[in-house]
Length: 66
Image 1 (cartoon, rainbow, N blue to C red):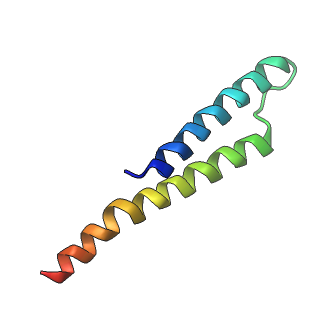
Image 2: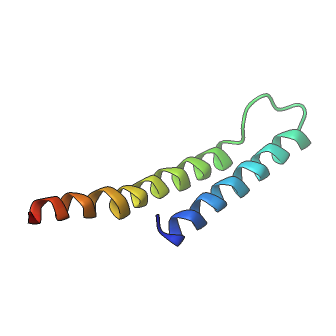
């Protein structure tokens, strides 16, 4: 697992905390702020892509070399 992957996951947790406080401060809103929500899911999606390319793809190419 790369250091960048861990850093991106840390950013996801920071975004989730900010999303929680954004909703807690606005008691009249029943739904999540769309911009925050999309940002969280974009960061999560690209961190999972990086995890795939860092972990699974190199193992696959090593398997092909045998």
